[in-house]
Length: 50
Figure (cartoon, rainbow, N blue to C red):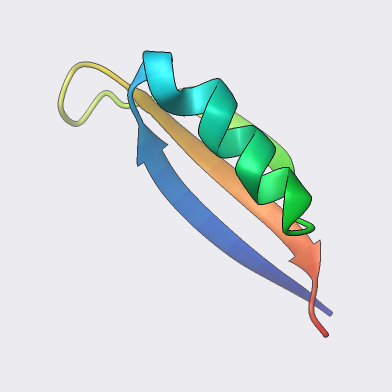
């Protein structure tokens, strides 16, 4: 079983935040531009549910 998390970041903070989530066991499965507001990134994570 998996669980998922979706977060929105500015491009400048994305790398730091993605690495922080990786330390928590999350794996990036998708990165998309945030077209709803015209800037930033939508990042989707997955990890095995404990």
